[in-house]
Image (cartoon, rainbow, N blue to C red; front, side, top):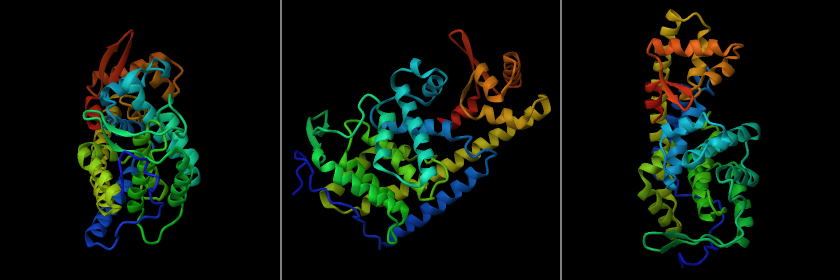
Length: 357
């Protein structure tokens, strides 16, 4: 019998597939796969499909960190982004670590289409650089309001076998489980193993998206899954607990599959709105500014807050004054707003920031 106060050393090895024969689940899987396919098509139509990864990932990063009570806003993170790493502080710095870990993981899975134990550890080191490595001590998940022990993950001497099993599960093709189902089971198992002292939740949510990229369900890591979990946080934690108690993963898988559909549709709409905004920028730039439109437009949408130095570097301009003139002209025509910060200036589009928030 499961006892939350004792290490869950009897955590079953995978594969531990849900009941895949329910009509409800298969309908949900089909709808989610259609939504993800539409999202991929929309993202790939962008002039540069990599263009929006960094700004869109900030929204995901803020939500994922918020689940762990690392609270900040999208705007605060955008403002911190312009600072050198050593000058970033507080929650915004941690959120940017999450974003950087996602981009790092994306590069890894695109190169070799695998998720390994080393990837798990490397991601955790980026997310939580102060507490790195597989844990060597026993931990407990506690409700700090009531001091109730909610869950005690497996003992450290059980982790190697469980993690090797998880790695095999992730990288072994399955004929009877759709990748969306496997992503949910993979996430549950990772959280149940709880391999690190800190950062398990954030790494686990990164791995969901990377797994879907690896399996070809996403072409870019732009699925805002943490937003869905954050909005349904109480259901999420209840389902994780019920899955442990019963061993039945049907509700868990259905929760995630529905989340994939919802967030794919929302992200697709966000990209459509950004495309419309880019079109309005292009129209004004073509009429009012004698510069190469494609390069400038790409620069404007790679981050929410721009500096003169960033634009000069991005466009490879020999003159800082030229970059300053471009930005001032965009402010003059109402496309950007200007904000003083310290001795410098920030330039931003209110509409773009709103779409990303």
